[in-house]
Length: 182
Image (cartoon, rainbow, N blue to C red):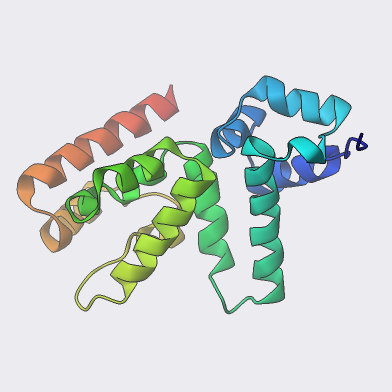
């Protein structure tokens, strides 16, 4: 029988460093707040290391890799994608490209799990290599959100989207912003 690992400090570091609530982190790990509370209180059994604990270990490994090889990926982008994914808003940055993604691929991004965050990073890397394409990371890194001023939105619409999809995205963004203000 193995000993339970105390992961409370690591959980707190991830939540504090990413400005995530316990609910946000549980979204990212495809888990639940009671599971994370249990981990904080009782530790984790490494022999039962599948599911959420495996994803948690993956988040830690990703951060450690960024520290070890900072040129491998943009740490600010990774951190912001993790934060947006956990809050289930990352998909809004990828909506304009939805027609270029498999439906299941996009759904993973939309659900906000770590797998979805990694899919988003892969897709962003792909778009970054396409001539004449503006990758989602440009807006994620500029402000953490898509442009909020109407004139910026109009410019974005003209540059990237067909009119129908643009209006749908802009309406969804406005609703999200309005609900966050309440």
